[in-house]
Length: 104
Length: 104
DNA sequence: CGATTCGCTTCAATATCTGAAGCGATATAA
DNA sequence: TTATATCGCTTCAGATATTGAAGCGAATCG
Image 1 (cartoon, rainbow over the protein chains, first blue to last red):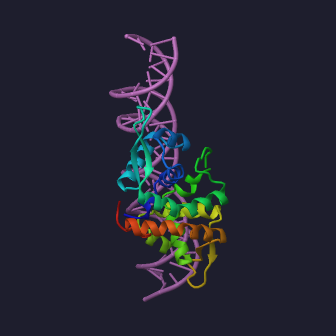
Image 2: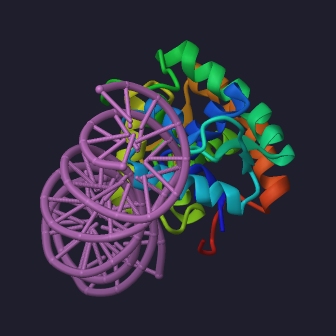
Image 3: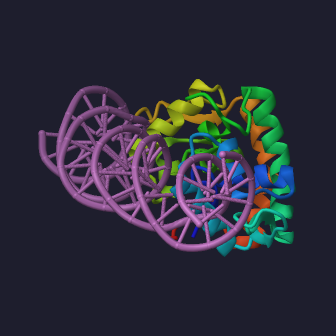
């Protein structure tokens, strides 16, 4: 196990910072915010983050089709806060948004 | 271009934190510290970080076979410092070392 | 001299990711 | 009621990224 397993997955950090920023997000909105992620990969990323207890599902009221949303656990929130300086630096120095609509 | 292009590459963050920690490293030592990176990928990662002016080569005295070492640019050092909180959290909460000798 | 070490590059096998299609369940419209 | 749209996914084939062994030219070591 290594840094790589958390940090070396293509979308892990993006998903954590995105959920952290919004406090709570459903599958669809995450997918739309990260336009180049495939649903399969997003699903796998979320499952992996749930296993690490960084993200968890919360039941949601209202639309019955969307039964749950994703939010950060206590632990995940700490991770999110620890990522903020890096996220900020990346945004400032490389015009990098969490939403990466363009291509590399 | 997006967060993903810097953060979504398998070894980018590991390489930056590793060089940052040692101030200066040659290709071989980096490779040996990250045992599961292939020389091809390490080479590509370093080139990409050079293009972004996060890493640069410095000439080295002594062994003539190894003409240069890699170090962080001014900008790269800022990035490194901004990554420290996250790196620290990951180490504390997931027993994650920069050197990931084991497997996931 | 020959053997070893250095920083890579090449290449085939494998792992990972994409994007379109589709599914069961619910919702919304006619 | 029926038809259609939307929700969170899953499946799968094709594209892309990574691995690991092999090898190369140059320099060092013995």
